Image (tube, rainbow, N blue to C red; front, top):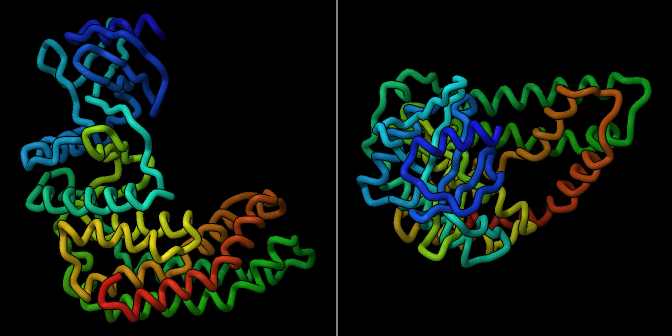
Length: 329
């Protein structure tokens, strides 16, 4: 394996001082800065679209992305004699975004706002060909699944502690899930933008894909990028932040204000964010995991996760209530 890596690296004008495993590849510390070497087989399905997005972002001034480094032949992919193919990315050294730090959260929000503004106007044939699923239909489908899982668990003669606990939670969460879907159907922003959105979004904007460096926030992990509703990036990051911080208003405020600083949010957009956050995503995920795995045995940690969801429900409702009443956080 090391011989193949060496053969791939030889195709670049690089002097490597140190090499170690990370991020599904090998970080190379070189004279020209850190790089990441990855096997092409693990990334090829989305490769052209990712490259085009990153090139577009760099031209727009959003330069701290993991763009591809061309080899000495001017090619993006390097093939070694044994047939394996490799790609080298420009990389960044630093720490992942700390979801406990309000400074990091504000930076992450502002970074996302700048990313969304920079990528406006981008088009690509591969993205055009991708079929978009309806957010509303996805929500309705999840609700039907919740109902099926609950019926299945209630029908069992012998129930585990997880199943008993999940059944007791069901009615409350199911009602909230249905309410969120109904609100989305009447949401002004969703009706205006909705599934007709021709904007690009990151698709996986989370703390793992944000590297906080001395020079600013670097954004990586564009594997799921495509056409969609940009605010889903914000709601996804915001939900993870709030879950990690016990639905703290201060944590949520840091992210929203950071984003709004560079990409102003309207009341309709804030309403959309509130609807998505109101959907009981964590409960649905646990039920989905249950029905798709071995139902006769569930890890004890899943019961603990479900109990954690319930224990934070009051704080979640308080946050959503404050969010709904405020013009802006």
